[in-house]
Image 1 (cartoon, protein in one colour):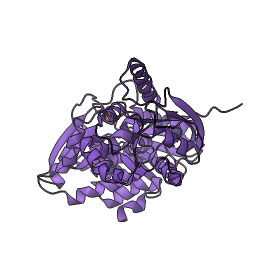
Image 2 (cartoon, helix red, strand yellow):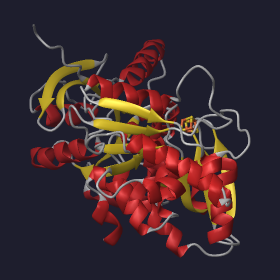
Image 3 (cartoon, protein in one colour):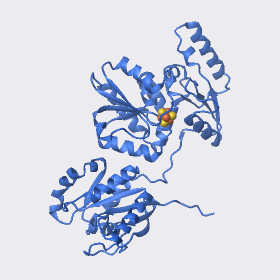
Image 4 (tube, helix red, strand yellow):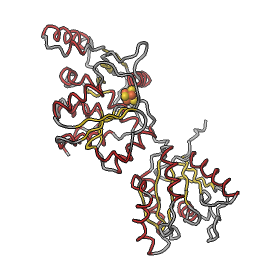
Length: 427
Ligand code: SF4
């Protein structure tokens, strides 16, 4: 049976005569589009089916100029915006020597609203074009959130650098990532699930359900242990010991040790002590953020290093990607702020709840973003968030990484070991 591979849709957008068709020809290396100086040469969207080594099968759209104002132009505009909705990658082609960038601004704003991946090509028609790039970036401030390249689209020698630019900066929707890449068939995996006041009755939380399903699907064995965090943390030795003995009697039931434990991040103060040395340990939050970010866990680990430089008056943003009900010792509003207040006195903590950052322009004021597992947003939405943070050089980390780090470097190294990232902290 033939396997249907979904193509990535890549669209070329811009004003009339910005050089979209030349870029199309450069990418496809053939006369796919008609190129001449008459405005509006691309009367309708042209489509080419190509294959890029490093991305896979692609449907490439060469769209009509968005700045045509006659009746036919209005129809074209609708068509172009429909194309944009379909695209996985929006490429905006800008001739920096022009003066009015309303069209480009409109395309970028629409693409941002739809969380599209976006790249910018400055098409230089003369030497003067290079000097005009700074002017474009002043007139379209949103450009700073995106990667740019300067080429002369009529010059074939730019082909390789253009293709490399696209491959390096585009995440294909066909790229797959394993939820637990360290999983081994026929091994046991312990899920440490405290079930606090926020746990809804009748179901597991999404990360817990996904991990359990993944382990079962891959012919291994998930087993849950409900940890009583109150007892485990009790200052009364008898109560603490009672919970520890219950845990030990559970773990000692196994003829050979489980392969790994996946714990609720908030139990890291306990599990960093209780998990046996020979058993791998990680957290649900780390599993999720690696999965939803399509393997960007290392960036969240790099980000946690910013904690070491925090000083009084610095701002930290705690970001949760949904608006779940927050009761009792909520992790984002109570537990993490308590740790920060204790370890970094004087640091100002702010919150952002929901699918959007309240104001992306303001993100630069934060010294660190601490992000939840992101289980309720799409990979596309998270990628858009991380792209903005990367472009502003604002470090970000994740609940699981933070709560492990707070227990000491050894604890963080322990939860990173399954991901092959143990050494990242030392670099
Ligand atoms: S989106 Fe974030 S805050 Fe909401 S349930 Fe998932 S991990 Fe928790």
